[in-house]
Length: 183
Ligand SMILES: [Fe+2]
Ligand SMILES: [Fe+2]
Image (cartoon, protein in one colour):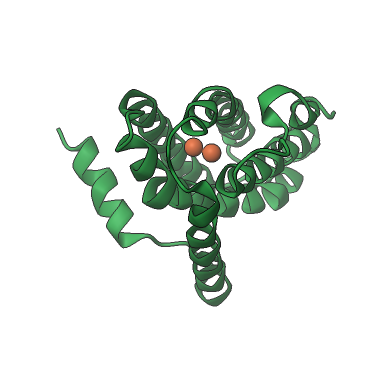
């Protein structure tokens, strides 16, 4: 089973001693994603998959919000525009699939398939963030230790919102997503 999670201890996926705190924070969330995807893939029934997927949908909404509200804008302004654009498009696909899966009946024959595709895409995306965007970001003159305080504050707000409402809503981000996908 433990297929993707083994990467958490390898290469740039590992949290290094010299990683700034914001990068360590985001990498630790990536570690949780790889573990969740492994557990979903190992689960035998759609019901068992959904029980774990609830955690995945929640962490994904929060993680994307932290990156798009705080981390991406900071590194984009320092020259990582191409990496950020690619990341945003991949986030949009993850958001779309995640919403579709959450709304699905687990009896739908495509339930496990959609979840499997989301897991594959997500692992590809976070691997690339670890290997490329985060490595480049470490070379920039950004205070990524201080940024972690903003990440933590926002994360707590989103967790409290989830505890209250059972949802994570980011209206400003939702407007941006609609605007960048408008045709
Ligand atoms: Fe991301
Ligand atoms: Fe990420």
